[in-house]
Image 1: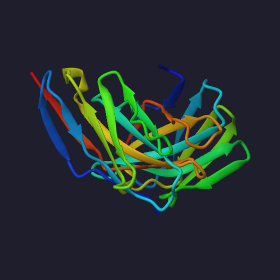
Image 2: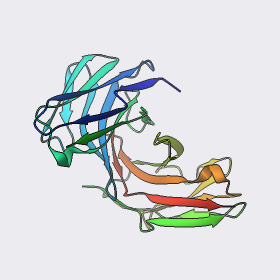
Image 3: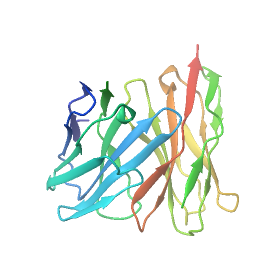
Image 4: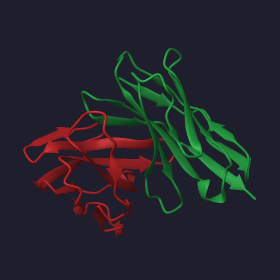
Length: 113
Length: 114
């Protein structure tokens, strides 16, 4: 199922570098989300967007920024990467109603050296 | 703030047997949704089952079923006739529909042995 795609799938970068993770969806969903997964912590919400003009901080937004370029595109940026941002990053989408299932992309594994 | 607790970091089960994964949550809301997601070694997050809190009937999807105990704030996942392909990390998640945000537990690694 390639309805939600993420690029790149894997990335190695160095401390202090700027990096952008991209998410695109063909599901026609209004809502998009960025999560990070760390061992023993599950997934935690970084940012979410209910439409192009609506951006909200999640639980762990410090050190991250986002851009909703279109209904189908939602990018996550690390302005100055640090090693503790090493994690698995997921984009997800859902329809514009509360309680609906979120559909996840394949994830981006990021290593910050 | 809502929290989700999965008390079993790892579990194992023999092929064809039944296993139950535990999940408890804390909320003061009366209307909410609960989910189980599966993450196989491919790392893709796959929805297993979804439960609406106002529905008393437990959700079922083929070999997967839940035991939803609203008063106890418990939401366990039962996998019947376990298959090797069920080997994965399983995440329990809570959603307040007003916010639309998912809150995840730490996950349970399930290994199905032949």
